[in-house]
Length: 271
Image 1 (tube, rainbow, N blue to C red):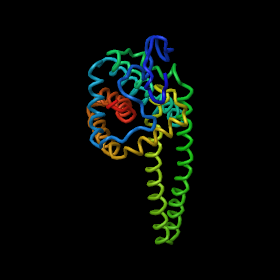
Image 2 (cartoon, rainbow, N blue to C red):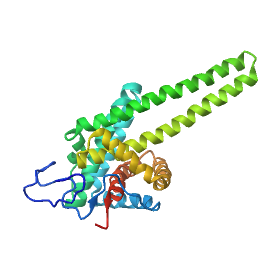
Image 3 (cartoon, one colour):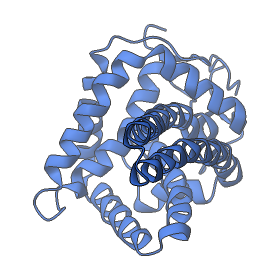
Image 4 (tube, rainbow, N blue to C red):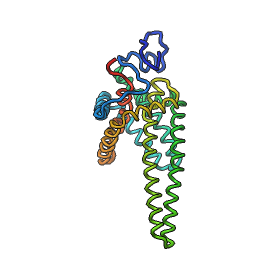
């Protein structure tokens, strides 16, 4: 199958790229858009509502995924450095598995819990390479931010030594600049990694190219993103109130949004 345009019809002679009888992107009545398309800002709400629809179709596997994800997150909190790296690696593989499972659910009407771990079996190397590239960006960003925080700390020393005006100014510039740079950098990281798992797993796109394509698609759709993330954060925050139990529902729905947003932006619904 031509992964760049998705126009070649699926035939019984097409080599399967997943389990027997399943070819990602094959048999779809839409066409794949490599660079993604611009969608209306209101589509952000549709990503969540469509994710809820997929969640409702098969509650048990999604709830199991939610429980596994929360357990891994809690375990990672007790292993500060190693745990964070481990959790990031597992998260991108699970994201790919959720995307894979959503595609199975949409095409075949069902999936199993084992399908959620597809990222640990298929395209594992490219997925981790994509994470490594984005992680390297985060590492450089943290060093850069650290210099501003250090400047702020120097301001605190000046303030303590009696030069209060210069010290306060340095503190403000250092910490505010560092926070702003970190905030923007995290947004750039999120834009680069958001669609990468879907593009790598479903279309066999190389890691760096998938990162560029993901960033480009997100850049075209900043308005939907501005709507989507605050709404998602509020929903997740509210669901965490009753002893975190609501997260068993909202976290799977959030992950399913990787798939619903990818389907909306990277496929032309009119073709």
